[in-house]
Image: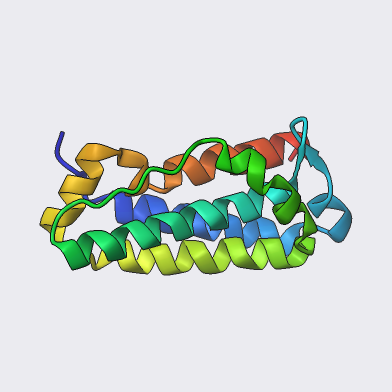
Length: 145
């Protein structure tokens, strides 16, 4: 499947959505439960973590000239939970925005052939809006926005 270049706009829109949501959330709302173990702040720092993971993948891939995708076990979310919970909520929101902005910029200028290879392996590493919007929907639903 060929990579649709609209991923740049989709990612930018989800970054703007993170920014807008983070700007309007109160300290109490950032601590509001989202699911069984997460809060809105934890969901945001989770997004920052995974966007930074893709930034690392892009760096490794570009240096090697081919896809380099170190395996990261899904259990990392559970293992990271106490660390993410220790991050001040407003800092979690700022981390999510900074990571999304950095990744959007890097993806938009990434070598197209390597980007296609990454996309073919896992579309969510390129179309970050897929992952971001899932969690932003969860936050908004938990807050009933």
